Amino acid sequence: MSKHVEIDDTNPDAVHQEVDVSPELAEIIGEGPMARGEVTSRIWDYIHKNKLQAEDDGREIEPDETLATIVGKNRLSMFQMTAKVNQHIRSPEKAGR
Image: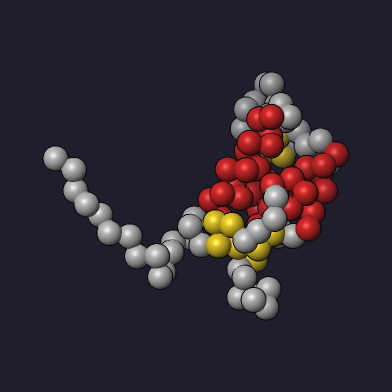
């Protein structure tokens, strides 16, 4: 028996909240606005497509030239990457929309 769950779209949680992305990040994941969760998903799609996960530790990313414009050139953990990506997103309200 499945339950019907109503979703309140008027106050989305952080993962579903729409954000704008910087021009540098848009080069990798496309133009915003998009849900914060979609930003994360598209970055991981890019990482997998370009085989940027470290072979010896899948939790670490080895940026290529394009991703380096967002996260820097040095190898970093996925948690460090998230902090760097957060510098390239903002809510549409703060962007003057």
